[in-house]
Length: 51
Image 1 (tube, rainbow, N blue to C red):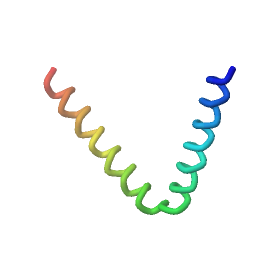
Image 2: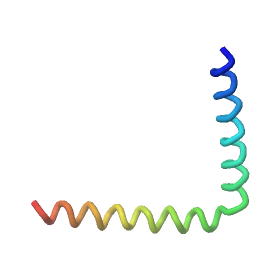
Image 3: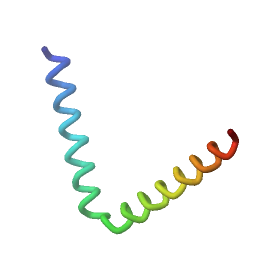
Image 4: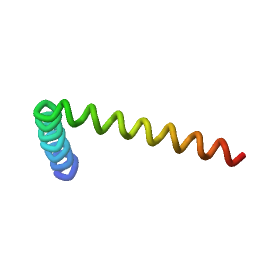
């Protein structure tokens, strides 16, 4: 049971830090998500063009 509770505590801490980071940097996160989606779209087009 010690391992489970330790894992849960680590998960909660990581989630809290991630949530605080997302609240602080909404604009940059939206920009990065947009870039990532565009890159995935380009990758899918390239792969489908190969076949």
